[in-house]
Image (cartoon, helix red, strand yellow):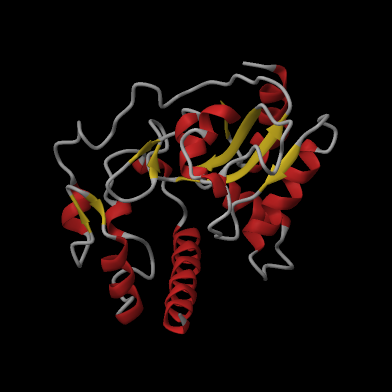
Length: 241
């Protein structure tokens, strides 16, 4: 583990950004389409340090810090503030956040998988050996040096070895199946009748991994509402086209 990883872990772990991984930019760029590559936007970058949270500690830290101003995507605002402060003295570092979906943004799922922080799952999110599906990717720090970090998900492949697969049964509309997450089916249901899913994704809640690390109920509802707003905006834009 390089010093920069240890430093970021120390600076951010206490606010719940407790996942720090790294991958080479060249490895990432070889996996994604040209519009999503790092090299054109940060030509000198050699490594991408992936920051994420596992469990509910980030939510609790943000709630405590922003108690009087819990508006305008507060979790993202808190993340931007603490990460920006943590990297400001790291030479040559630049930060990219995943908050705004874009066809030219970085593919954080690929970044995190290459960094050894999680593996793909049937429910459409990465699964971590300890935190299960209760992780979120918060930032990528691009640096002009080679960086190494712990890789907890190396050798971990959750869904093929899962016998129970309760996530499939838990989805009220069959949007989770042996082939994975049916995005269109999920979105169609949630836009028409969100009653089953407003307080949390049933399939994700039933994942056998990381159950003790589930987000607090308030956080689950917050994220579900944010996801539905994204679906509404996507559907509206699609109608315009």
